[in-house]
Each structure stands twice: as C-alpha cells, then as structure tokens.
Image (tube, rainbow, N blue to C red):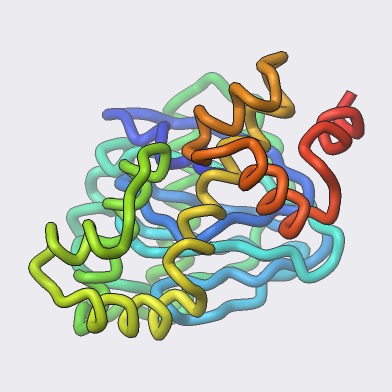
Length: 250
C-alpha cells in the first residue's frame, strides 16, 4: 500500500479498492479518504488508534503518519487526492487535525467516486465529507514528537531500497545512535530493521503480484541484501515462501 506515496502529484485524484488492507506506518503529501465497505479495520493516525467499521470512513490529512490493519476480513475503497485538488479545505486545515477523523458515509457516494470522470462531481462529494468531518471538531496539530517521526518515515520511504542503517540515519539527523534507537522503538513499536523490512516486503509483494521478475531480482530490487535474508523475512511475515505466495496469486 505504498502506492499512496507514489501518487501525490499536483491536481491528482485516484480511487482504488483493496481487500484485507494492511500497511506499515507511512506518510505522504496527499489526502486519503478510506471507506470500509465490509468488515472492520484499525487505523493508527499520529499515534492514535481508531476502529473503522463497515459504513464508516476515515480521512488522513497530508503528512499524518498512519497505518492500517484488518481486524476481520475487510474490503475498503480509498480516494487519494492531492492537497490542491480541494485547496479551500487544505488552507482551512493546514497544521491542524480532526478531533475525530471518522464519519458515516452514503453508499451511493462510493459508487460515484469509483467510476465518475466528472471532476466537479468528485470534488462535490469529497467536500461533502470534508464538511462532515469538520463538524466533528478540528484542533491545532500536536507536533511535540511528530516532526522527528515524520522525518524518520520520509527518510525510510525514500531510501528503503538502499542499504541504510540506523547509525547512518542518526548521523544525518544529528542524534546519537542510542537516543534514536530508543526513540524509534517508543514511537514505532518495533525495531528499526523490522520497520524497514516491512517497506521492502510491501514492495516485493507488489512485484510478485504484478510482474514476472525472478524471486532473486525482486529481492534485490526491494532492498534486501541476499535472497536468503529475503526468504527468511518473507516467510516470517507471511508464513509462506515468496515462490508459493506468487503461485497463490495466479
């Protein structure tokens, strides 16, 4: 689901559907409006966990660190759009956050967002949910820890395919290795290597599903330094080898 990172162009809108959504903590410059059409998910937004059930939607603002996990079998539809696509709303919410980013939605709206080519029709629906969420309350964003966390996430998003280390990142950011290591575990709930590998695995899964590249080629293009390490990390995460995983997608 790192697709959002790659679709933050100016005046951009895209709608995608995903089954059993699951993604590592990340951020991007676009908005994200996620509709749960079946099942239930949890969304962690800037350290706050929310449960989103069928019939509800959640909006992620630009540069909010967020992740998703499926509680039950889930189906979601996501509208991704750049901040200039709804510029009035961006100007109103810049450096702020919702008191509650969840709202009910109308099923006919998701159908229109999925198939319409009329940008005015799309924008009218997006603004409808902007208004609905504003009524939940909005406040100044708490940036006490968020600035460094965002900096870390962006650095890893931009460099996970390379052989990067926590020691190298600490040096670039001007922090001691011990401080950044402790901060990382506190803020992200896992070790640095595990977090980076989640990005690499998402990249690898995308290539396993959508390309006919060899397992070895996918491993190295995803940032793993050896095929053995790739196989071990992949099997630990998905309880299946990359080769067998690919066969289940055919």
